[in-house]
Image (tube, rainbow, N blue to C red; front, top):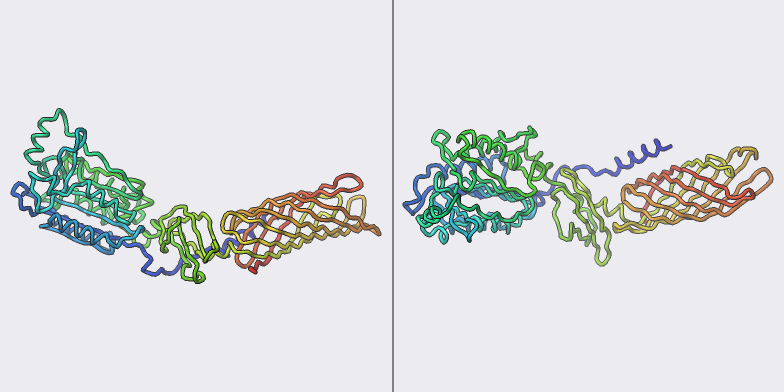
Length: 503
């Protein structure tokens, strides 16, 4: 009997499962946007000597925009001569329309520098074409300002990649004031104070702050950028799943860069909750979407006037995997208020949540078995159940069960019995639910020419699987009735199947 119930549950679960949609409205899909900047033309004569930042930027823009690699929807390229104002204007334009599910990547290649920031830290700068090295703090682009601007971007997935350094060699230069400051220090310069992170954010740097970021004539790129591009083209797919994650990319680039420079340049990464399961920079587009996002379907099929909110905010069809509270509100009536776990690649039909939570009647027929000296062991069962509307916190359930049995009783002979129990329970769950049940009723039997009857009390548990069309339930009860020989104990198990309907 238990096996039959499990089979019924599986059948109903398959019947109610939501299939992945064949397609989604493009307006709901998250977008991937990049701003790529490579600066090697400077007005200040002290900032000459770089060969490849503009080429780095063009090559990076190419790999990010390649459908077979990065697959970005929009890539903005600034190269050669780029002023401070041009950089910030492009940054604001690229990020202005991003939504929370989108991905934003900022790539910077060019000169960097550093300077003192308080007594115990330093500040890092990326230098635009119109900067003055001696006035770097006023004319440069502070990396703290870049990090703050990234934090302010609406997109929750953000990646910063920097092929510049701040050591005074390689892709960096130091003003005479900073050189004097460094010479006055005892020991190495203090490191920068790291900014706090938001979810799904990563910052990748060509080298530690006191190391050089090198260029290479043989590679025709900055060393770091060369291996970034190599990794994004697939070499960084370390687990061979067809995708390149942030951490896979860093591991590949760090190993190749250190090998190529003999350990003189060691790339670093700063991350917050970014890994192989949350943020991918390149790879097969279909696999990437499946791995990164869950999908909420059925929005267009909801009744007019129903407002859908996820964690208190209106959302589109694409969600990062996780546990959310979903509410459906119709005018002044709360239809659904329930936690839902959205898994990567899973499609959840919002209409199913609404359907499962509405009030409904269940009418079922089944078979039961009781260990009883008062009634026959096997009985046919009729089950009627009323479930009021459930926004998501559970609901009271009212039921009526009628069992009829016919058979031999030990030492008593042939008997026909009828038991009726009206019950009230509390059901927790939508598609799959459970409910404790307590009930009162009456049991009677005909034993030869004699009619006998007694009040009945029942206590038990009900497990059920529910779809829009029907249900399956397993009811386990312990029934007690008084008799001339004392209390008659009737533990029972009943399997019920039947249709379901909304009023």
